[in-house]
Length: 474
Image (cartoon, rainbow, N blue to C red; front, side):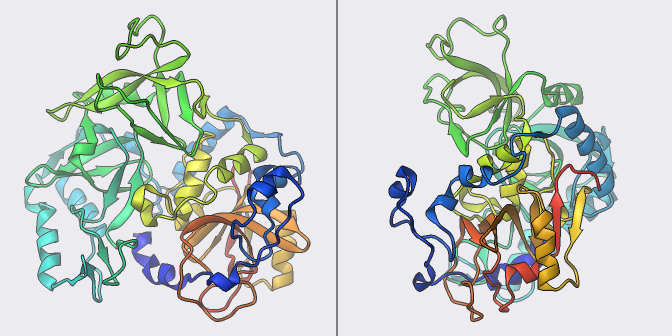
């Protein structure tokens, strides 16, 4: 798995010391006055912390890049192009009634390799027996020659794990933020294929469109039939969460939905006025969208309930128009958020940041940075190019494009005074002009220029591998 290859990379992406916060401060507007005293990266002004600053500098920022029909077609092309890349995307349509037991065992084994080196849980160094016990929990002996497939939906944001355990396993006895077993977060209302479970039924082995692994069964509800699952996947009239996160109102009549948090890019079906009752949770649904949301019953099966989303919430009816202005607007809604490795801590990492932004337009991008670098679209290759050649590429790159370097993905913003800027959900970096790594980590969504450095002293500019203009033909 890509994430297993990134442990050394994340540890190497070291960040600012307090002396490195030397960004330019301006008090020229009410917005910058509001931001006075907020630390920023080197060569970043307070104006640069606003999406409008970058939108105003972008040519044709409001022009639609692709229609919804073109995006749907692009998703199909991307699915086919990446189908041979291990762990990039999964075609859920290929899963019917059963799966070969041998194929399933291979899937589970390939995604659950035992890491080498010293590892810790709650500060305690792990013995080899720990890993043997985890492997036993995968219940490979319980897999049949023709394993029955079930179909489900995620009923609250959850974690996808390499092994069926919630233990936080780190390479530092004092670290609780980098868990080697954390693969990805999985968002609410995500359709999944359930291939296996642990002996005690507490964990399901699932496949979603962009990932596979172990998920707590309490976060998944099952459908009686595949046909019901297919119908639930076919969104027609729906809302998309376009805010960073939104929260449902408290509801004592619907505890499974009370205060439920929905992340950016989550889509939920709207209910037709003729089908929902006059009162929902002892409230008249005035000035609210009425939606149908999946919940998990005690027997593990799905039940759809009506809920209300106030019209003041940051949502869109259908996907947002795919414009460069909208890409940047969505990105800046997460500015300052915590970095979460693999979606830990109810947060996002670098590739989840871009993944959720582009979901708002209907794109089904791969989840991990390595696979995002393989998306079939207009691509600029930096390999073997000198700094000036790299700058020439960036001079023609469209804002809102994604840039990748080893183990990291960023969103390109543009050029100001000869410097190139990105917004990204970063583990960290060393300050501009400083070739010596420091010991702190940022772990935040930030605006920074490409003159910052990796732990090896190389700038991000000179570390770039590829640039991708999502949706633009190759």
